[in-house]
Length: 404
Image (cartoon, rainbow, N blue to C red; front, side):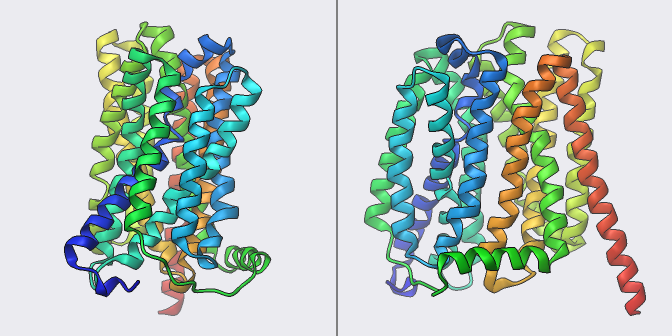
């Protein structure tokens, strides 16, 4: 099916469905975070055991990005998206019936892998976009994806508090089945652009990683920012319960603060056009570092002020992280446009390795040093990302002077 043969209103309808699909699918890997205290109480888990749930989900997502996303260059994207959709709905349902930690962890890992359909949807949107509107179309789908990441915590917090954590996962399964049905009807077949075998696709990714130092620096900088992001969100619900006696619904409302920051992130694309993507990555990393450092004053102020500062920090670091991600994607996609899918897979593999590390390190530090330990980890990793970007900028300036 040729995208130019579609009426404009049909094309918009398809893009809207894809934005919903990206949001619902990526949300699946974040529903558990505000629910961890409820899951821990029901399944008799330790804090360490609870921390393994988001860790395994993020690790599954990273594995899925690395090993499954390259298939989009080799097979019809429609078939891949629908297959992952069916698997994700079944895994969410299975999660709601788990009774042991070991089963929960296995399901969490597989759930993370299936949720990578969100990363298959984004390039599909670019292919289906009307001529000259690829950027706007991808931006629309990315907005859906970002809202899914951040509002998932709000929804799961309220549903978990009202009906229990198992109901949340059952409703999530229904949402995926619903969006999968819509995509079954509206998605066209996609042309296959590569005849490389699976081993050749994977080998080409290794070559891309070796060939582009800029890719490695972008991936590592965003990876360190992801450690900070995940450490915060993976431990927030437990901290709010223990320190303030606040339940999962309140933990979920902090996702609204994060969404406010992330929705401003698309402005980073326009800013990158004016001042350069490199500068935006530096500003983003600096904002993440400052937002977390701001929480060092929590012991010095009242409980009410502490919660306000945490909410402001969530707005700041989500804006910084998403702005940096948009700019890093611009940098990476410009390296070799015909290999954008594989470059995207490499970038996001490191990002979600960072997410998984943030979950496990955040949980362990919280057990050892409390919330101040989590804040220290997030601040340090934000500063490391900033240093990587500043060093990269100096290298570019030195290279420009040598050329001149």
